[in-house]
Amino acid sequence: MLRPPIASLLFLPAVAFPVSAQRATGFGPDVRAVVSYDAPVIAITNVTVLDGTGSPARRSHTVVISGERIQAVGPAGSVAVPAGARIVDGSGHTLIPGLIGMHDHMFYTTPAGTSVQSNYSFPRLYLGSGVTTVRTTGSNAPYTELTLKAGIERGEVPGPRMHITGPYLISAGPVRYEGMYELADEAAARRVVRHWAEEGAEWIKVYTQISRAIFAAVVDEAHRHRLKVTGHLCSISFSEAVELGIDNIEHGLRTNSDYDPRKEPDKCPAGNFAALAALDMKDPRVAETIARMVKRGVPMTTTAVNEQLTPGRPGPDARTVEAMAPWIAAQEIKRRTNLDLPTPIGEIYPKMREIYPKSLQYERAFVSAGGVLGAGIDPAFGALPGFGNQRALELLVEAGFSIPEAVQVVTANGAKILGRLPERGTVEPGKLADLVLLRGDLATDPSAIRNPVTVFKGGIGYDSAKLIGSVKGQVGIR
Ligand SMILES: [Zn+2]
Image (cartoon, rainbow, N blue to C red; front, side, top):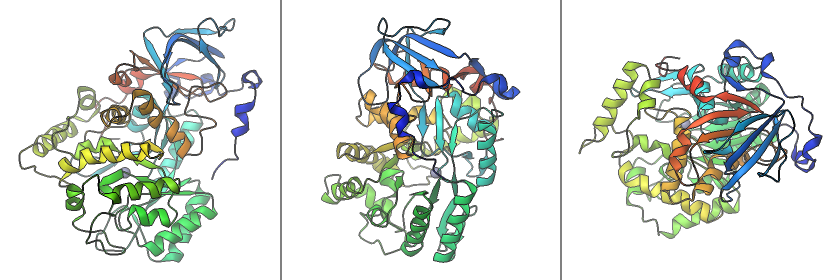
């Protein structure tokens, strides 16, 4: 259910916004316990701003928050600090828009391959790490996630703004996917999409095994109800999905079957990873797929954090191990060690060593050609909510994006894909005050993304350390 357009808000003078925002005093105890700033007017002074538009950093700025919105942004001296404002000294800090996570599940795939619904730890990790908006992008339990979203909106549960997707949709086929819904035919596709539209889903997620005919019915029915469709593809190639009207494509290169010469219609080709490992990035078909996506305005979601599946990439850091239940941490360290052996053990996606650097190039080429790239995490193994969203920024820089461009991908581009750019995604007057105050200088050091101090959502400041601290040892349990 999409809300009516709110683009007109942008053109109102900032002073016209009523200070009627939700205040923390009306929140439940779990939320009040992690609030650090709750004042009608807050002024962050002397701060470096990376505003999410891709513009270079601006130094020594003042950002005024009034109620739930940003009222003013400008150089110190040009922006008056309102009398009575709560002052936050931003010296030595960077302010960015809240991160917008475009593949941010509420379930955790453990190193043992089991799935744990994580409605306690995940919302806290997301918000504490600076993620103020998530799209769930696939769910094993969409009803519990609707309840979680309602709890967050009522101020009972600390967490990000949520955009719900329905259950994973697939066709019957050679692989049985527990936890996903098999659509028997086109009528079933339409019925299920209508159902989730009524229940409050905004997106539909299709998974690797789906026929073109059933997919076309999903897309048509979704669009009739103003829902959008995204997919982790395989049986349908990127080019086919674009022709059939998909609204977003997940994961990038490793899920594209356009380049496998043995691809048969409606089937996921068994040798796709070998085809991708052998792919020459100068092959004209690469630019062709990208041009097709750009022409039809289909955005792509990077989940480069699936370096988790790639031998030779970094293992879990200390904070990740701390957040995990001890046996989960032990499993992950073992999984990582086995993956890094000369002959990896337990490799899920073979040939990732060859495919991974190409997938970074693919994402860079997509943006260079004019594509809109968003970023998500796909929490699994050692990639945890929030920490993984931060890591996405570092990986974009590794892929060749400038730091301001990388900030844009993890913030404004997500808002754009969600159709919420008029209200979120950049540090501009009139927008919701969803902001992250980071210790350090993100403009020169991408790793500063790991240091949120305060995360503002709707003008209320949340204590990052308290949120992260509250989930110690909980990942893999709840
Ligand atoms: Zn996923």
